[in-house]
Length: 252
Image (tube, rainbow, N blue to C red; front, side, top):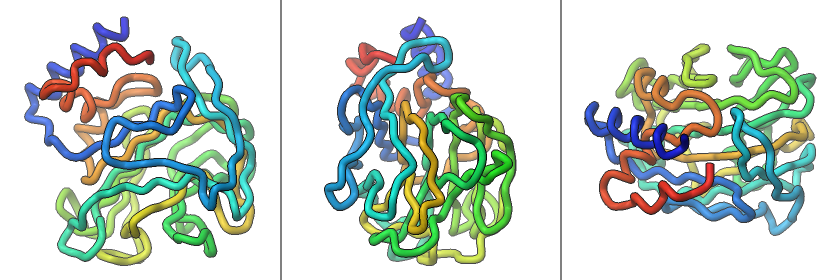
């Protein structure tokens, strides 16, 4: 079944002229390896959590199980992406999470841009299950439920208004918001960023089955092709068509 789904999405991606951006996919099959240039490691070398398996969207999948994290813990993603959007830093990018939170109450951090985890995180799920930042939250994430959550940042305004964050759950746009900082501001990326952590404990326990970073802002039409958790990412599938077909054999 996986091969069939993969080939269908590959055909759609190639037929629609999918942009061949740099995309790094982490699948948590016992380690933090990725398919692209980005690298992942424990923040400050402080290990936590454990690798395991879970049933994600009806199929077994490798996962990384994590507790609620402290300020000195997190997963550090060195993205190795060039500046874009007309600034000195990456200003257009997409983050993707196949994720399950154990408890939907309270805040849970997705993303932290501060290199030292010394101020408030930059994307959260709030106590009502919505996703966003700066008091603007959309959608619903329930406890103990797998979701595919994507955040598309377009600080330069190439696919819509400038400084816009687009938020997707299982391929559907649940909301967008204009951010208070634009090019080279709060949400522009330093050489690395952190996921799942926050400076004052607004974190939550859960499991992550897949994480990916793409060095461009995806559109709504592209996001719809991603679907729900455990379905291969179309951007990755497009890359398969230019020489990475052995990836089809990966378990998921």
